[in-house]
Length: 445
Image 1 (cartoon, rainbow, N blue to C red):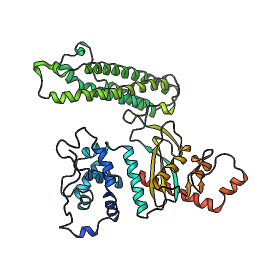
Image 2: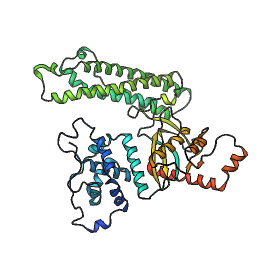
Image 3: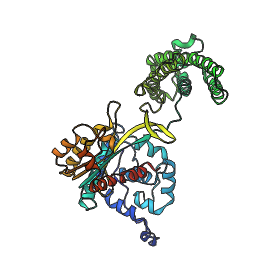
């Protein structure tokens, strides 16, 4: 059952000098997180973890403590494990996280609760923090700057062979977990040869050989050797897929009462395991099949695959190839995110671009969001050249923006060139560059 908070305790009662040594940032954040509207928005998402989470079961970690633990984790760029360890060892962090002298939740507990927070809730938190900053006169929200960045997903460098190897490994693991359920009930797979066979050793050997070929010689001989190993890998992966499809069909017809008089004491566990395995098969089988088609088209047939149609990871399927055109990093693997910031260093909006969205159409949504949040348009809107599109200046000025500081693309007229070379225009455009430092701070580069 989800509870609001632990009973309040005086953490600094025995060590009062620690109260004077507390980080001022934590003190200010403590006042900010006391806002009831912020808390209720987060609690609403946490309460949706299970159907009876708000009213039934043993007491879980309080929602207030979870929110503050996640804030500390993001603020310090710690892992979940490091966050738990450092909070447990620090009286100051125990006070800030409102854990007091209770047991700090495990890293897996913190991770599972964090996954219940929706993007809409995070945006609502950002909006509320911006409103509180305006009330505290940290910002007047008169100037708005916009930029984009690529947030990389935690995946290894994507290759077709690595994707096929991951597919064989994941499906083999699911086959191994499903075997105890199906063997006990004499499923239709009892007479099928190699129904639960793991082909991981063969796949791993081929992946190692491909790696040696890439690191070794180049030329036609290396290309032929690489092609032959890919063909063998594309034989092993479909065999594993067919095994998984047969096991998936057998799991769909699996019934707990089919165990008869030999029903084990762990039947409730098995009843929960079968739907979970089916969900995993439904998730990974289509991705592995797409990876097979992609490898066959790219490596064997030499056909290009559009960037938006590529599968780069089985575990982060939303990952895309983002062209950065930077020295040493021409492309990155993740998603492109738009960020809006007002004067005072307050980020007011984030937006993950979909496959059909373009960066050049994000200036006006930023102005609309600013008007809805603060009740008035900004006087200055600044962005780089990629935000410019036809009619953006006229539309923004129609919304009440006084100065639109976005360089034009293409050939410029004499009046436009003179305007962009004016001292006041350059000063406002230089102010735009400050958001790059904010991006590096948020990404912990």
